[in-house]
Image (cartoon, rainbow, N blue to C red):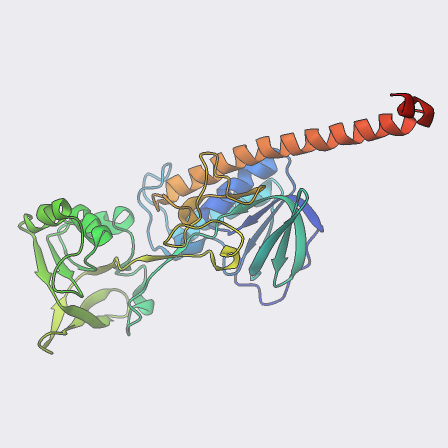
Length: 344
């Protein structure tokens, strides 16, 4: 996998049929289909290839890898596949905004401007972090943000969950199927999720709750998480909790800042799309975790990238047909004598 590019790249072209913003599974999956169909395709990412998948220690639910696959390996496979068909991929390039002029999308980047006939936004989302000592060090090694991806790794073990909303409750219900015991650490005085979810979780015998509780730090043995230090905000009491994993579900941040003034977003900042993944700006599409209503799963993110690419192919076909028709009519018009045009 290519590392962060400190030197600004030189783009091979000034205009592409498709510019994909984001080199995670969604963007790379789209790039495979786009380039295989002959579209000139540029993929840009401000960080590294793979996105959040690249920092996931183990992925056990991606079809085709029956023994599981590391996030780094999966990212490299996706990148190599896209490059095989001719995708141009640049990391370390930050997209700063989009504007549309006639049928062209102008993409402003930290490496200069580039033009596109269509754009796919696949910038994903970022998990809100606890921002406490030890968290960054153990991401993927006991600190997780996806129960569907990682809960099966902790079968018969003790797990802590941070959060108290619907996402935390739903993910805890799933984790409890595998874990020996689940400890929920809730910042507020009670769970804030829907009543039916609260009742389902509270009825489980292997789940306990600590309310008015915040996590101050995480600890480990340099290879894995071993516990955390928590504090009761109501009493001020502090205590250590031994755990084999910490799942953090305190929200997601959509990576949509460069598009906030040009693309319609939902109240959470995620891109609103139509059934064909088109956004409110013609020629611009969105797929994967950045899209409102996403399932936040790698397999479905890749599928959305592919589906969006098929819609983009149809859009480009219409665009090219319209352009060809306009040129043909212009040529015919130019060949028609002025007198005949006047008579007509």
